[in-house]
Image 1: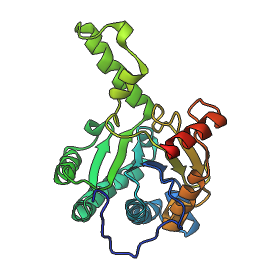
Image 2: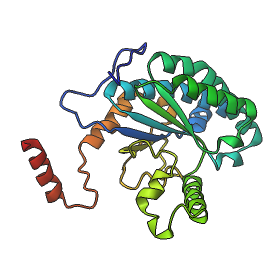
Image 3: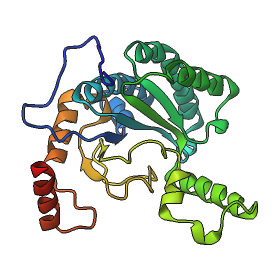
Length: 264
């Protein structure tokens, strides 16, 4: 089975009857630094604890039947942070990739990294390529790590790609549609996010998946990322399951469509 997975911890799944599971969950993992500061620890200790929380999210999504989990690991704006912190984050990313990829592969998880990877060091680029190559044939949960990523960067890259096609005579300007733009984005081959989660108490999307989040359901949590566990994930999914997604239609139209689908 595509989502068949066997992790070390006992399963934590949604209560019976909660069947409206999002296909794609996207998360901004906020609050690592504040988590550490509350404990009088260096900020990097919060980031290390955050890596452990990632493991729980991967397990929780896989066991609940989520198909794609996208994690905002490092934004294109994070280079503005103190140089020492950025350096430690790069080291942590390098270490985490090496330590976790075999575990992901063992559990049939496919790893993708999206963003301006060329902005990283050559050794880190090599580690990313090796991790993706090892897991590319896996058929279970897809974990997307957005690293040196920004939504504006993503849209700009797509626009440049289409502009180059027009310049080469391969595409007419009139043929540029939202669908063609979507096909040129980083996650073009994956379903758009159904559920967006941000931890840490902030209520903004911070240049994350600007195009893809157009019709996504938002869920903001005050829990700092290292403390965001599978039960917290389940609460977010339960909230998602109660919402009516209209995509521009009326609520009555949505209910009528449900009735027709059920009776078929």
